[in-house]
Amino acid sequence: MVVAFASPKFWLGILARRNPAMLAALAYIGYSLAGALVLTLPVMRDVARTEPLGFVDALFTSASAVSTTGLVTLDPASTFSLAGEIIILFLIQIGGLGYMTLMSFAYIILRDRLSPVQTRLTRSSFGLPSNIEMASFVWRATVFTLAIEAVGALFLWRLFRNAGTPDALWNGIFHSVSAFCTAGFARFPTSFEAYSDNGAMLMVLAVLSYLGALGFVVLVETFEAVAIRPRRLSVTTRLTLQMSFWLAAAATLFFLIFEPSIRSLPVASQLSNAFFQAMTASTTVGFNSVPVGGLAPAAIMVVYLLMFVGASPAGTGGGLKSTTAAVLAATVLASLRGWRKIALGRYVLPEQRVLQAMATLVIALFVIFAAVVMLDLTGSYAFDKALFEVISALGTVGLSMGLTAELNDAGKLIIVVVMLIGRIGILTFFISLATANAATEPEIMPKRDVIL
Image 1 (cartoon, rainbow, N blue to C red):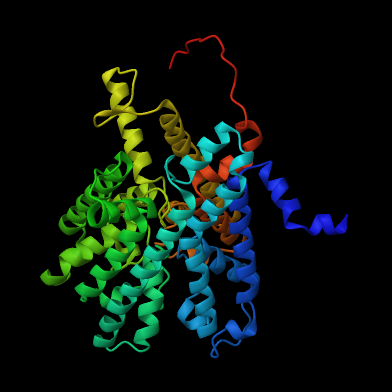
Image 2: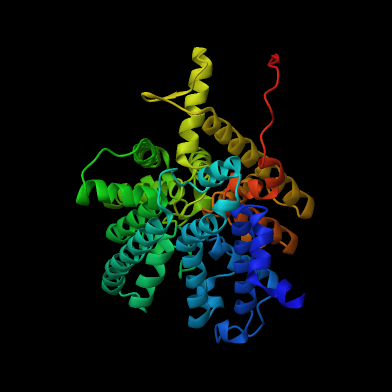
């Protein structure tokens, strides 16, 4: 009995009666707890730090890395040794590349035990097309990830070396992985504010985060369509590319024209910083080249929107997802026109996709509301700062108005939960809690109208 209880097959059998979403949720919680335990070891602390690292701060740092968020309660550079930074980088890579491989691995293991409804919900919540071959996809995405991070590290190493930054090679590697995984962890206390005049560095970081936020499905399909076998891109890929372009372009133009902290920079730096701040919010990477707390209220509202919408499906970023926002916009437009079908471009969307988009929006708003209320109950925090940190955590962005460092232990644990929900996926997380009801659909019932 003991042997059977300890067998991996025993636990996989239990998980199989749930679904891959539950396996993913438990895995990320396990990664965060394991990372926290490792980070509390004395060898992980910087030699200048005498007091031990508390478990809550270690858990917050670990969860922030695994969720690729980047919110921190302590400055990583002055808190952790090189060994500690390596562990953080490893956790970031798990959160970025591991997200895709874990979801695919879970799906491959359990797919034969899922009902058709569970299969459809699982693939869509993980951002996986119905026609994708999982094992091949995992291999190609892994190669893409390591290649892009290596090239990014090479560029950043040269830029850090030219800027006279100490440990240029390690900084290049660390920030390349952090940028591509849209983690936002920086080895500098003020992120990249000291490099606001280094347009080349900001562009490299922005491009890395953009590639990570696009999603592995989009990257692989676009590369193969352009370089290997020319063909028309799928609707999802075209929509993702269009949404990411227009969001970044509109936000860049807004920051360039209306944000005083960017207009006060030298003319040569204004465009690069406006673009960088737009990309850092829309890709959910969370780096900043100007103080976030000093942004004008209108700019803060734009950042709210970008963080909430977030990145693309199956990418390393979080948020509502750009394609979900597009489906919601199409739903609103169809409702205003009195249409019974939801059209996106030249195509009619399946009803299930519309329902999932609406469910994601409602759940996201509920999580934000609940988290802000709980923060208010556990501490006296300014509403605007609490709202900003919660949206940043749910979108796995990492931008902060300075509240995270002031949180008490209860507040830190609340943000940890929100970050993990954002990393696992807003809809995916709640699917993992409701799989018993997701296994079967209601039988055909009579229709009744309700006045709205």
